[in-house]
Amino acid sequence: MDLKLLKTDKDQNTTKYLFELNDGNRIETVCIKRRTGITVCVSTQVGCAVGCAFCASGLHGLIRNLTASEIVAQVLSVKERINRIVFMGIGEPLHNYLSLIESIHILRDRNGLNFPTDGITVSTVGVLNRLKRLREEHLKIQLVLSLHATNQSVRNRLIPGMKRNNIEETVKAFLSYGKRHNRKVTVAYLLFPGINDRISDKKQLAKWFRDENVRINLLPFNKTIGTFRCATAEQLQTFKKDLEALGLEVTIRKTEGRNIQAACGQLVIKHKNKFNSEANMKEKYNQKKCLGD
Image 1 (tube, one colour):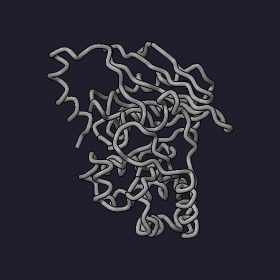
Image 2 (cartoon, rainbow, N blue to C red; image 1 turned 120 degrees about the vertical axis):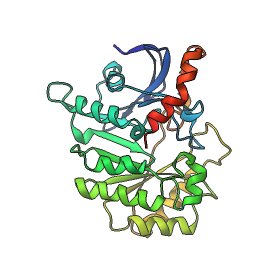
Image 3 (cartoon, rainbow, N blue to C red; image 1 turned 45 degrees about the horizontal axis):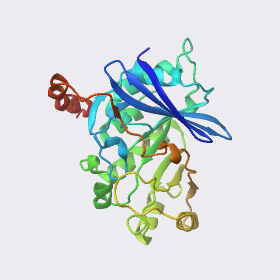
Image 4 (cartoon, one colour; image 1 turned 60 degrees about the vertical axis):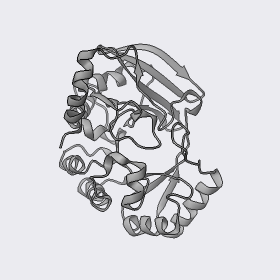
């Protein structure tokens, strides 16, 4: 196996696994029990280059991509009978495009796990060229766009690693994926009071997604890094009702795993030892290679 299980943390509905890779790097994988079954949230990279202002996964930058076998091994190593796989762990899946696609093919293979395509979801901040490339794959997986803003300046603040990706073009490519594969696609929208909950934000979301096959999934902020205020349950409900009045389908994601630092934005790479000089020399090269063009 490419993974060694070091530790598990559990709360009522969530189990977090700490795995060590063959090179000593460590990643985290999460299993969540819901009424509809068990979801496994897998990582695709050691660290992350996107540097979201609200996410701990990018605190140490990007170390390297995971191989397809390391991704699949996370699914094989958890001690649960899962019915859904989500690429929402550490790393930006589309920055590790080839391993992502290879791992999905392995998971779906009739001679392998034979996992149903409907049960596989990729969550991305919207790496534009890779998003367009994903549209042409014959996979029909579920797609989630982590949007979190309705204009370029706010998105640049929240997701600095996507500054070169125009928000309008990103939304257009995202919608095109849904139409190409006849899928309902999901927009993840982390609500920050005073930042992305204005009247103009509501109107822009309606302009983009009304009459489209789209679900807006509102998320509360899981306190990790940054100085953002957490939206209250009342603020989330008010924003939801306002969007619904504008003709949008909206849900609020129930947060699981906060008590064990396993909720969205809380996963972080773990270092066994400081990297040796050779690994340090390779780090910048690996980051460029992982990011692609």
